[in-house]
Image 1 (cartoon, rainbow, N blue to C red):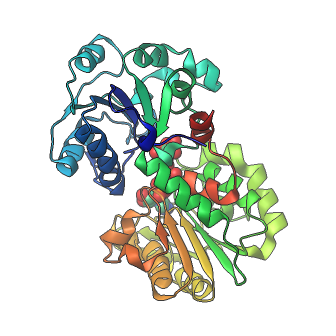
Image 2: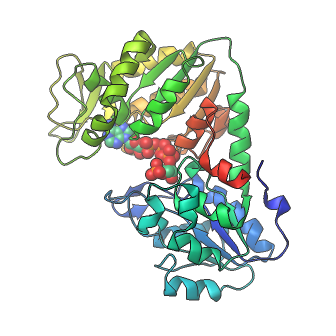
Image 3: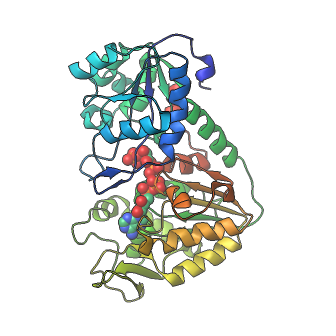
Length: 399
Ligand SMILES: Nc1ncnc2c1ncn2[C@@H]1O[C@H](COP(=O)(O)OP(=O)(O)O)[C@@H](O)[C@H]1O
Ligand SMILES: O=C(OP(=O)(O)O)[C@H](O)COP(=O)(O)O
């Protein structure tokens, strides 16, 4: 098992990996629960007098959410109420100079680590440890702290490379989320178990669906992922239009597995029966899936689908949510996501809502975290934990 901040020596310069990967709207990074949670860890370490350099990522190369971390430093400052310096460099001369100037209790945020090609290279932890990123930064610090539970499923250099060559510790968020999610995995339910799967990342969800065969009775599908399933079921949706780049690449990777899942799970996978889009007047409009032709982007599941899903939730003993059923950030397309989480809040079922983006819907639409058994800031990592699959970050910290 990994060591935690309770085991950390009193003195030492620390490299801390956090996950403040966030939604970006019109170029503006949106505050979310990840900042507040990681601020707690950073405050504890800074109060103890450690000089701190912080590593994090934002978006994926090629996506419009792939931006610098300058705004993240400002949001962290608001949560911490102490200066958070930012340097537009990750491990070059400028970064090294800023790191070497760090005094006791001072915090420096380094540039988006995914701007370094080596971060995302398909390599083993041992190979990642030999990257210039890890070799350079590891020499500047006494220890590495990984607090990024929500990235614990990614075998990237900043997650699995540093623990190979440095004394390593789990941060408070890593520790608490890991314990909470491991405890959920051990629970057994007598009644009906539903899993609501949406959002944009089909590859994360499909692997999970294959592995929870014995625990989940019904899957309620929506979002981009739901459309891919509809495409596999023979409907004329689930491909890119109007310059979107959500579908076709994922379809190429996942078509076969999606078809197999539909075949083997049959009626256990519920697909949307209607979808919502923006009409010419800018209003929400809905169309039945049967006979639909895709001319526009669909942005939510339709009202009939929501009603059906609400009924399943009402009859469930446990409901797990990962990913939004629509673009809930726009109120017109929030009906699917909010309908389902409101239905969960009304029952006393055991419930977990996960995902950095999806969990934001709770606060945005006037619900309280107390209405759910657990709200996780992690998405992909939490659903993997439910399957009992080990997380590469935990393996690296425990090694
Ligand atoms: N039909 C859709 N088209 C575009 N985006 C969608 C659609 N449905 C859901 N989304 C988006 O999915 C995001 C959440 O998905 P994702 O990032 O995969 O999950 P999370 O971060 O919650 O784990 C939301 O921000 C929502 O806007
Ligand atoms: O937001 C994240 O995951 P999530 O959407 O599953 O919650 C993590 O920062 C991982 O990001 P990635 O899915 O681009 O590797």
